[in-house]
Amino acid sequence: MSGRRHVMDSAGSTYEDCVRLFIGRIASLVHVPREKDFGIDFYYQPRVPAGARTETVAELGSLQVKGGGETLAYGGLNERGEWREYQFTWLRSLATPLYLARVDSGCRAVELFSVWPLWWIFWRQPVSPFEVIFDTQPAETGSYVWQDPQASPHPDGAGKGDGMRWTVHLGTPFLRLTSEDLNSPAFRKQAVAILCTWIAYDRLTLMRYHQFIPVLTGIAGWRTNFPEILEIRTWQFWDARPGANIARLCQTAAPMLGTLVPICSGRMTMPLRNLGRSLSGSTGRATSTQWGRDSSMGSVERKREALARQTWFPNLIEGANRV
Image (cartoon, rainbow, N blue to C red):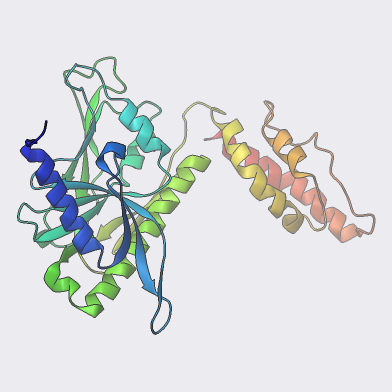
């Protein structure tokens, strides 16, 4: 309507302008126009020095901007009573680490939080959560100690995913930006280093998820605006059903084993396509594989090959069967 808009439109635009001003001091920002916004407001790359008078960019992250007391949440029911499962489908598809950029109501500071703990939920259960709400703490709280996401039954969740409302604790911001701090070259340099560290860990989380490597490594202890990481935690996930995921795990392992096989068994070679086919078979055995040999292999090399076939591959399959 000409001459009139909802006040929330201008408020949201103001918060995004604040993010553009503050984070633009330390990163290259690309704004996603509102009509093309599917859940990401900005893409950004930290700017790093590349010489006395030049700079470049490193890593890649994305931002969801929230202002004032607005809460970041996914799933739940929309105004028509429909479950927003599509939001979790979208989140699982992300190839770029996602961060919450929270702007205070006075636009005096921008605080960054990583949403990587959401993948702790994705890994631990095959169904989507009914609803996820993110909880944050102020920077003044001090260092943060990891808390597992907490679930409670939701009255509207029956028959929709796991039916649970999850509270994900994002803790204190790992980075808090103010105009005063950003005027310091030393602070800007430190802020870039912090951004690069977090993106590197969170990028690994997404890479492993898409490659179906059921190992989650995340930053679990930190202090706002401090580059030192206080704690790193690693979780391993498996299915209680024997052999439930062996085919997918072996498809993931096959390209790596194509490189490791010659190293672990001397000069033994095998086409990668045969390795993938043999490891992803329903029997879970690699004994039927036809191995190629170099005609010049000596007795020591043949013993090494035999040892690899007798111990290394059975142990691999046995471990995969436990997942």
